[in-house]
Length: 125
Image (cartoon, rainbow, N blue to C red):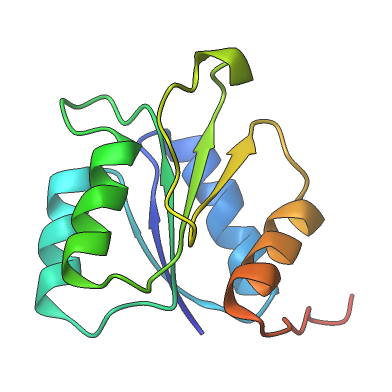
């Protein structure tokens, strides 16, 4: 399963990439949402997109989700943010989920499983 990850914080992105690789996902990661959307448009759609809400750009995670759904309406998007939940004014697409940082690796992997209706196979420790 392929996952497109967009996260501008290098440390958070590295932790998420490690989590996803450990769960045997193929991960394509970007820090810049514009570059990520360009890559999305030039390749086969991923199974899931994970994006931070605050990307240090004029393009935020909600705009990324809108762009993803415009070209691939059934690709689920997981939006992640450290924002307090009360500050989320955006409505989510029925395919999407919001995860409040911090969240556990298991919570992220269960969310992916729920959205794709597929299980994941963590590597044995």
